[in-house]
Length: 113
Image 1 (spheres, rainbow, N blue to C red):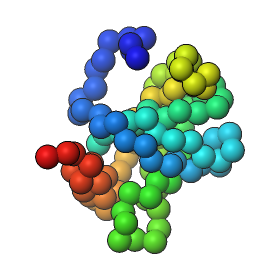
Image 2 (image 1 turned 180 degrees about the horizontal axis):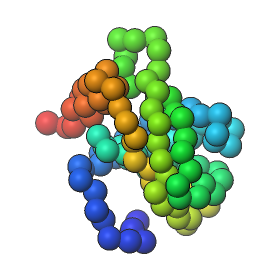
Image 3 (image 1 turned 90 degrees about the vertical axis):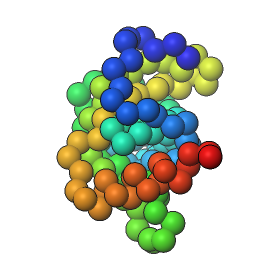
Image 4 (image 1 turned 30 degrees about the horizontal axis):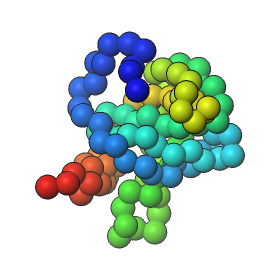
């Protein structure tokens, strides 16, 4: 899928489907299309304007029964012509050491060697 703008990502995104929960999402959940240490792309059923801040939860740590919570700011939105839904790209806002560690461990475990 061509991006509607110049790709300015700092870290590479890994294609990975993760269930993302948020009371701000239609149906309270969405799936990620890709994820990195800086942000993620979600497939959603609604239009979410740039600048919107979401509080999301993701199950990234199999050793913990609790999901990891992140604050995300939506940066862009575009229709997904393949599914008829919308794609939204967001960046993670401030993260504590635990959040950063869980995310980095998760991403490292998903890279195929």
